[in-house]
Image 1 (cartoon, rainbow, N blue to C red):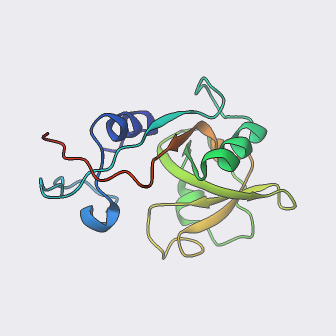
Image 2: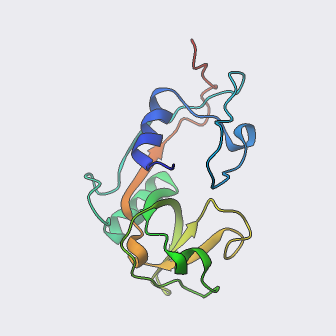
Image 3: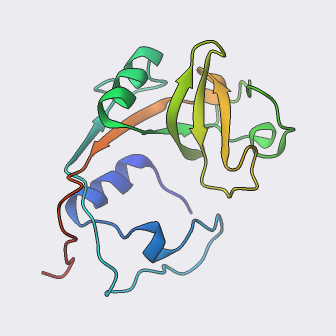
Amino acid sequence: GGDDNVTVLDAAKSKGLPLTSDYGPYEGSAGQCLYKPQMPLYRVDDWGFADGSGSGVTATDKIKAAIMQYGAVGSAIAADQAFMYGPAVDVFRGNSRSINHDIILVGWDDAKGAWKLRNSWDTNWRDAGYCYIAYGANSVGTEAVWCSINATAPPIDWYV
């Protein structure tokens, strides 16, 4: 049924999550959990909201600062029909406000006034799974979150 960044990041910090290469890709439909006890789990060291509060659409400068400090930033978005199925455009511009999906913001282009967005739907969506989306379009940037990891830490065992 989907979830949000807060629940996922809390689980990633407390218990850990498997890598996509072990678990398998996002399917976008209801199904059985594919986790197996032999899958190594990885924890995030910490996470937080880019604006400190997680309320509404996070200011563009706060998201940029979080990307520069932590790398890609998670965000909620209103994934309406135009976002999901609309024709490819240089920069997506929509005004839906019904939050129902999470994406990753991997960068930006101020000349376009847009975020570079990575989606989980497949490489057949838009530009190999990426698109440019205007700052604030379809409420992108809602509850923007960062996380930090220790890339050298070994996997953890959930049952230890």
